[in-house]
Image (cartoon, rainbow, N blue to C red; front, side):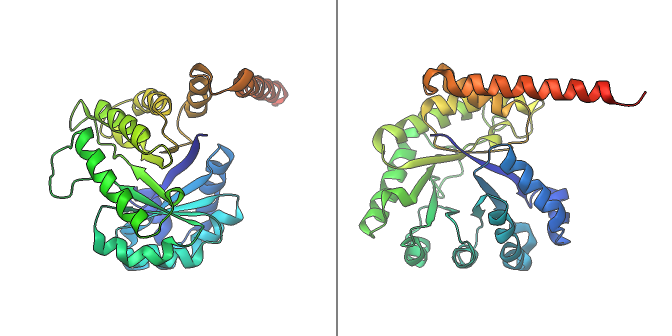
Length: 278
């Protein structure tokens, strides 16, 4: 089952950062509601750029997400922040990203015993700035999974992130990710995978084209949790069509439902145009 995570609330975006600094929760609530309505099960919150106001903001915004039908994924480079948000969230929660570092992992083992908390294991070689091959990523992932299992963490609480890197940096990054994902699904069938697919198109024109095709390929390879801009162009069409093509849409039910809803929406829009005063 494909699960969608909306990623538009990111403090790296100057406009979003401004709203966060102003604690403009009316605007933020609209953003959350729009993403949930477009199929996002989780809302990603990245408030790292708020610095010392990161936790106060998260303390206010997490209940807003949950009250409006969403669950929360919090990304932070501070372990203290990740520990704090587990005390705030009432629903299922994802936290990340954490590279394979035993000291960091040991500091959050206790909160990972909580049934509602899932950790995003970032599969990255912090000793090398160069891109790593799928086989190297698999070795790191194996260390990560083995260590957490030895510490008593269940497989269902671990999410592997194979790491998407921009095509602008290396034209083979998309292929490398897909090959890595394939290895993860073969070697860790009971461990879920997650990735921010929008990263691939960073710095390029017409990003929605790359995002849509990359999304289809990632779904076919078995990606479980997809982080992207759900308000972007053609995302729902892409997901529905891909699931139909690869045989994961029984009797084409989702595809036909999507087509009916699209037709009804167009009919309403046309009626609205006719009813507008001349």
